[in-house]
Length: 135
Image (cartoon, rainbow, N blue to C red; front, side):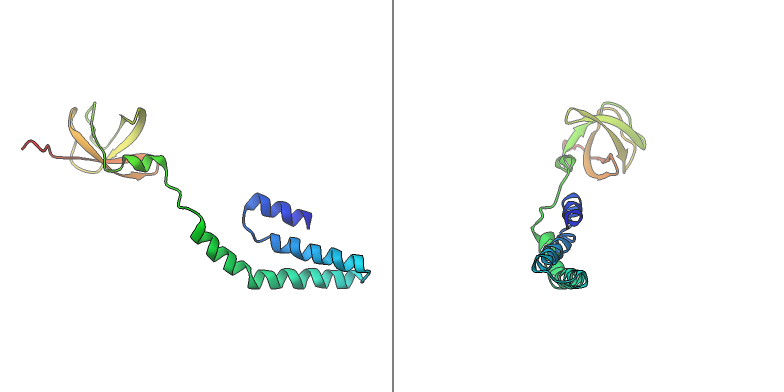
């Protein structure tokens, strides 16, 4: 019972809590004075029934209530920046005060061009040259 509770705390899976409940029932059966076989059967039956009946419901509802995690880098998608150096395919540029690896997804970019962050791939920002609005 204690091992199942610790595993549940470590994994945050809610799966092992049902074994803990089965363990509590088995302890109650022990305190009544019933045999080890009865304790074992009560542990197994309670644990399996709870897993089969309650676990699917809990998992489904947990997925709905856990907020989606969005990395802070996503806030840069759609923003425009002026590049300090030429970028053919990949390079490095300062975005938000941090130097990031960038990957050019369009035509070659020259120093001073304006680019837009269009996405993130692995740990690189995907950038694309944008046409000046002055034309």
